Length: 54
Image (cartoon, rainbow, N blue to C red; front, side, top):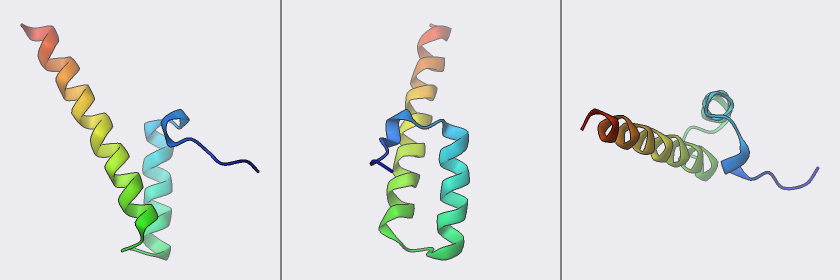
């Protein structure tokens, strides 16, 4: 299987992967990367919501 691009995965799938990763290795770099991507998407979503209200 080829390498997966984190940007091509749905947010729901990212959350599932993060939960599974945390069970195996809570302090792993993989968990940190997944969390960072989820946070990034949340920031973008918040920004989009804010812009629409103006």
